[in-house]
Length: 146
Image 1 (tube, rainbow, N blue to C red):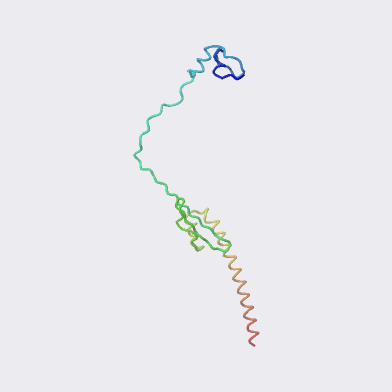
Image 2 (image 1 turned 135 degrees about the vertical axis):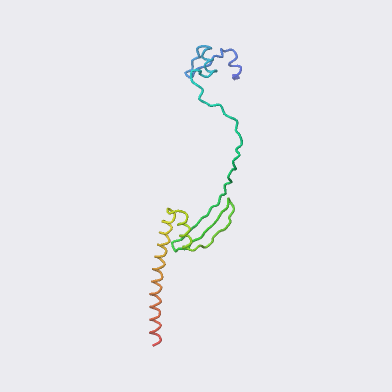
């Protein structure tokens, strides 16, 4: 047998039921539930009508500049305006990256300069190695000419 919820409550007393499953005790409880407690002061302030500000709203422009570098000291820049690419894969000299970082903030320039210095040391070691190889090649050539 199925019973509609509407027809099931038709013959019963419509007194609210508490969470424990017991019926509420009287109409006074119903009145307390319907009306907020008057002993607490109303803490919500009445809202004023919003007026339009005469101040000019600032338009926010989103530009994203991404500078990437390698351990070899090669740097590239990409610029994005919103979701549209303005420039991609621009080769940038390490000195320009260092100057720009110093202009922006000291906390930016210190780690960037560290990466640039490591790349410089690596390139100096590579130059020294190539000079040694060149010297060996010159000596081998000189021995062949004698």
